[in-house]
Length: 344
Image (cartoon, rainbow, N blue to C red):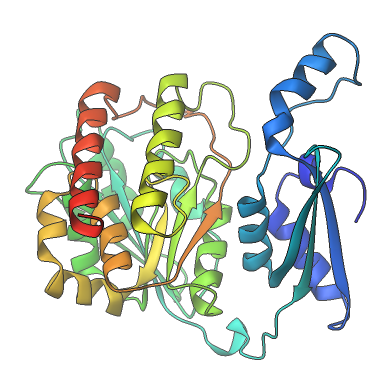
């Protein structure tokens, strides 16, 4: 592989998919990268002038690399360390993908929960790429103090292409979870997606979530903002530490990798969601976020979880609806609930 691919490439999934398409089936790829545990030491060496200065880089561990390769069509054969653990090498091969996603197109419902997002609404529809048999975008609004609902009405009244439907709903309840469940109830697509109206995740990443399900790579696609470097001020430092801590804890409790439990972008099959609503009702009653009912349901029903690395961007309009301390306490309660449910 070319030098510094892992550390410098903006979108590693796209890069390795390109490698997949041009690599003979019998060949292998060898990837060399720095161990993420050495990041502080190497950064200090660059600062002191003992190492060439570099820009912001991707610092990925072997699980991140394996996950990205899996999404891109490869499976890991082995991972080894060299030079006192400084250098990592991963060897991978192509997986046999006879069942192409082209032959298994599904319809997609994209639910967009929105509160105080007036400035973001007009840009959402045009930013979402075409994928799937057909798409519907369902805006769900509640409790806004600005003109979010008026913008949603304007957008959803516009004519669109035949393969795209625009719909809207207004909450009677409160909170993001209530908005997501309302959107899912109205959805008609085979695949359900959540895309937050703050647009801090690039809509161009949504086809990756679709592909994971459509190509049978996984059954529940969970976005992760904690793989690539974030834009400055996109997430407060304490929030980053909290998310990393809870991601580590939930991974240990649930037995599948969850580097980022609170990324708003998720996807699953509608049939699996309906099964969860019927058989795992208590998860939906106790979750104020909307993330954990789906995560707990996926684990309880033995769905294959795949994390999709996304680059987290700064808001261009409005302010976050997250209260770090109040929601942090809620997150702690969800952690205790997860331990009781899956480990006690």
